[in-house]
Length: 159
Image (cartoon, rainbow, N blue to C red; front, side):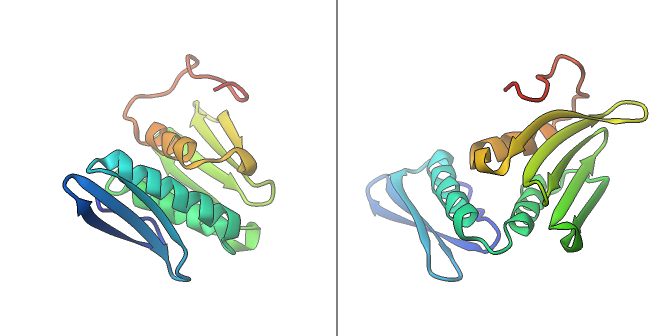
């Protein structure tokens, strides 16, 4: 099982019965997200998704949390440029090759973009109220894919 936590949370995994594990993520305030299931990465992902939802509801710096989580998830993947700007409502972007994720802190939306020769094109925009752990991770995975994106990708508004 992958024991990697998310920014601001610690993870604890205990076997409570033969092959049954309790995965607990705890933040610095003692809030917990727990899942009990078999020993799979999906069990950790479910608990992580719950912690993500808690963070979304109560975080005082949600935008920075998303930025830090994105950087953590990308890991060793080559990042061309990245920037977090607290003065611009916590807006940020992370660019890799001809793709980037942009979080607009003022409008509270995450946008996946690809670059043509000169311009960036919005491929998908997710408003904060629709942002879930699963579609956030999907955007990160799309960013880190080695393939170049083209017109076969769904356009904004279609998933």
